[in-house]
Length: 298
Image 1 (tube, rainbow, N blue to C red):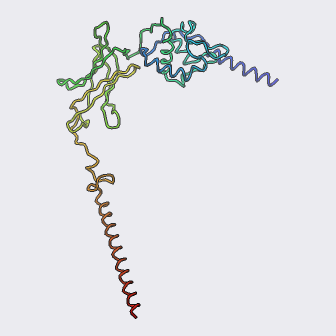
Image 2: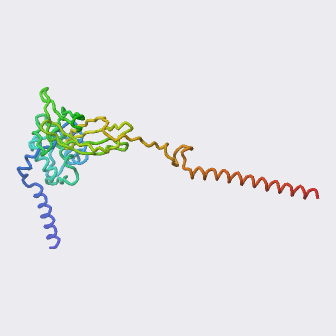
Image 3: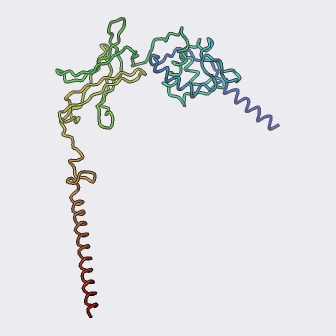
């Protein structure tokens, strides 16, 4: 009796989990679109994620070699699968369905969208819906960014444009981060958002150390999209700094003449001590020799 009750509870619990995963997808979830334009790069990244997390059940896309499970996992290239909107695919991938687990806690949002980018690459009739991201413009493969310095206003600026039918169009609402190249990486300084003219201005601190001429290597980089844009600029906007060379400092690893004074004195003391010891030993040997000679004569 206890066994039957326990079995029933397990079945009910399992069934409730399955029903929870196969619940109707909300309309607002169906309408969600990717936060970036699908590209060959996002497709390749999605391929890698698919091979690791999806292939064991769904098989190779287009080959119908999916796992023999109940319910049967669909082939991602099938019409039944492809009829889902991008939002529906994302919802199922995030929340799970049937025996399929949810991946919201194991894959990042970008990785999940990359998988959809990979799956859509098998559908020649697919057209990606317009990208809608609050406060972030879509950066296409034809977008370009230029980084410059306004001498009159003493401000750095970055402009992003996109080529549409041969004409350049500014891209507004794009977040750009500004970095300064350093020996061991890029130092983040500030960030700004492009205006309706596609231009963002940056206020650069006046106390940033530059090289011996005050030069700074500035790097502007877009964020919030898989199609990252980068632009660099070398300008005399830093504080003139004479770099301290390691060989100019007294240190253990420096050349002999720049070794620490105490280390030099210790070294010389050791040499003198060794010399005195050798001289003492020679004098003692000389005394022993004289004693032996006297003993022989007597």
